[in-house]
Amino acid sequence: FALTETAPQWSRIEWAQQLLIHAYTRTSPQHAAPILTTIGYINWWEGRGSKAHQYMQLALDTDPGYRFARLTDQMLGAGIIAGWNTNKNTAYKTRLDMP
Image 1 (cartoon, one colour):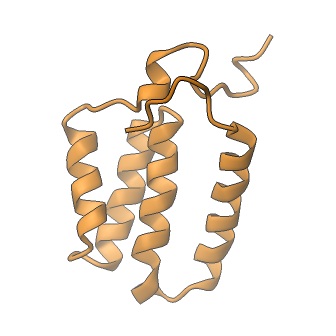
Image 2: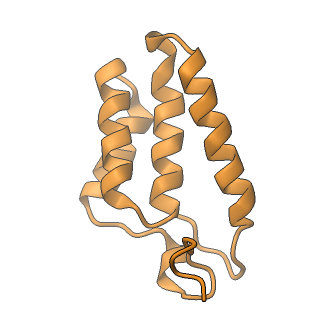
C-alpha cells in the first residue's frame, strides 16, 4: 500500500506514467483496462484519489470484468490513502508544493 521508509523516485514514477499514457494512445480498447488501472494506481500513489477513481471507471468501462480495476476502485472508495502520503518527507510534491 505504498508504505516505505524512503520516498520513491517520483521523477521515475512520473516518467512511467507518461509512458503508460503514450501506450494507452496506441492500444486498442479491449487492451486498455490494465493500462488505465495502472495510471489510476499511480495517481493514488500521488494522493489524487478522485483522479485515480476516474481512471478506474474508464478501465471498467472498457472491461467491466477487470478485477484489478474493480478491487482498486473499492480500495479508493474505502478511503485508503497511499502510505507515502501520510508522511510529508515521502509524499508526492507537485511543482506548486516546492519552495
